[in-house]
Amino acid sequence: MKRPFLRASVGASVLSVLLVVGMVSPALAVEGQREVLTIELFGSDNARFEVDGRRYAGPMLFTARSNGISFTEFATIEQYLQGISEMPFSWQPQALAAQAVAARTYLARRLLGGRKGDAARYEFDICATNRCQVYRGVQLVEGKYGDRWKAAVESTAGEVLLYNGIPIEAVYTANVGSRSRANQDVWASSAIPYLQPVDSPDIGIAPFSEWTVEVSGDQFVAILRADGYDVGGTLISIVVDDPPEGQGRTSITVTTSGGTDSLLAPNLKGAFNRRGEHLYPGILPARLRDGGLLPEPLLSYTFEISRVLVKPTAIDNLLPASDRQGRDIVRIDGEGWGHGVGMSQWGAQIMAKDGSSYADILSHYYTGTEPQLAPELVPDNVVVGLSWGRSEIPVSMEGTTRVVVNDLLLGFIGAGDWLIVTTPFGIDVVPLDSAGFVSLIAQRRWPR
Image (cartoon, rainbow, N blue to C red; front, top):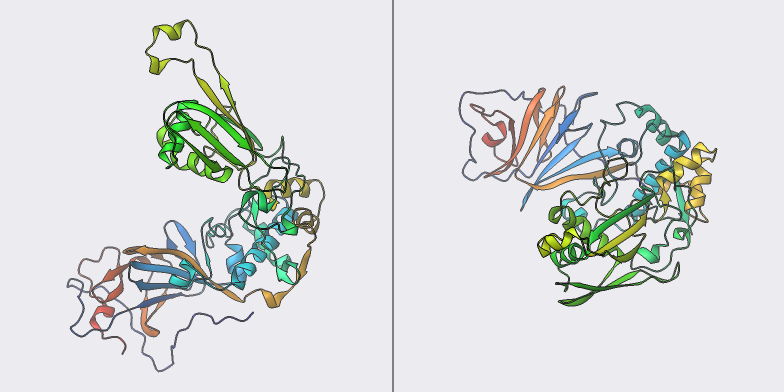
């Protein structure tokens, strides 16, 4: 899959201009000035750009948008995959190789449907957060154990997982507990043959493979009410409709003195994670036996709910009603961390330690598939969406950087701390301490 790389019409006849610090305040737009819509930064060999504490190799593209600045990186496929931060690089080589193939397949699948939503609006192929795959630039692969992850990416180059000749939905999750989930039991979708439940060795080994959360009935109701559900007052009952495996999603009906409402298991997780810690800090996330905390109030969609009535003690009768311990307890016993569909990353690590190859791991979790060489389905390069909707973006630059404005070479800037900012004429790049700086961008008319 050939894709055009970053464009920059820089001819030998173009005069390079070194940006320097002047002695007057930043210039505003010249009357009749055309907008500066794009600023591209090309680092010299081994140069790095640091934004928001993360290091990137670039090239970087900053684009003026109606709601601020969008920020993307143009990366080769190797550069992108080496920047993925989804599994500890110290893990077993075969687990890392399985993760590399899954990540490459996930990207190939995303590109099949073209750019949609934010990707279409801000012109990128894949975002850098857990809405897509977590991407951190070069800082991790250039750090401790980075050579292990680089080797996993390189040793599986061009390999993807296919079903009927098409890259699969290679979703993965931190750990699944004793068994992965069917896609149709978690999301509103038809059953996908390679995303059906399989046993996983996580229990007793993976962190948070089993966990328990307890809140009072009043707290349970308050969390749901804060998240917009039609409940309130005293908790009367919780009824769970949990179909057999593969038969659909679990729903929970909550009846209170102030109303009745139903929600799906993923919605309960969302409500707890959005509202629980804010409403009840110190109670949520729950404390573990070793004194640590769960990483979030509810960790997965795989859980059972029970309600226990606790009898009041003699001391309770001496306390105000709001402080009495005699109350109902809602207990949530769960397994795993994440959505639970597809490959368990901890399961992959455990299988690799036990001698399984990366192909064995992938075929286990994505039933009926195996890694295949299909370089024609993998792009040569990819545009990564890093952020958007910002009025300014600080950039620390190492080495000399070529600056291209509206596809035309402006010149070069040296190492230091710079700021991409919105201005009356679009966007500009100025020193972080811009006092006395004359912008060469603002002084010119665009296009030239």
